[in-house]
Length: 300
Image 1 (cartoon, rainbow, N blue to C red):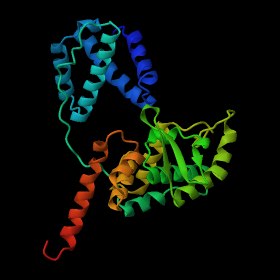
Image 2: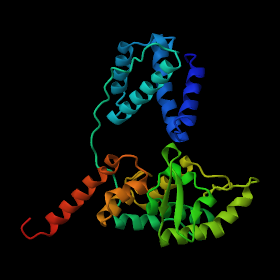
Image 3: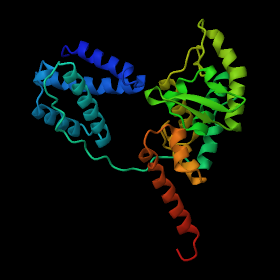
């Protein structure tokens, strides 16, 4: 491996401290950069400042040959462009070879979401008579009730929840705070887990854990752990339901808009900086409205 460890570590610290990127996002950037470093090693390029636009073009060609999606390639280009911008700022390199690279156009796919009948199947999976089942149910209910990200869910502390007001303090991207309400189903699931299951899991660890969600050892549950739990729930539900943990966030937004919520409110609840990010869900609702119209209008 090319000796760029120090530069890479400095960049990752920059992302976490100055840019306030989450640990998950930082890890994704690191993986993308390390993949590029492996390519440089194969090409016999030993210094970051020796990379040219031609080298970058060869790298992108190899990504296409390995069937990376346009979305994945765009993310890698963005990460490497940012990395070289940082190196240029630190005077480690003189030029950014990724400046002239245009990002591949992403295919506009509607976000995947669940219908209410599919959601009901998910909510019936967990055995709420067990501590872990109570925890899993609370996670599922809270993600759907609030639309928060999995990483935001993992970072919830007991002090972030106001049970009397049924509101949650969320630390989003860039450490931005927002308050999100939750309903009765989430309230009951969280209360049961907090007062029963969590208390049974905590003694398995010797630490004073303030996190709401803990693992089977009584330690704070990570975002990766939550994704594993959700994937396991989905597998137990039905083989024909193909969703990702992020689909619950899509489902929250879609159902809110379908039920008449205004887009600005949904934007605030999701923690989107730009309204254009929230607007992707209008495509889903328009498709749904068209489907209802075509199925029910006598002269459709």
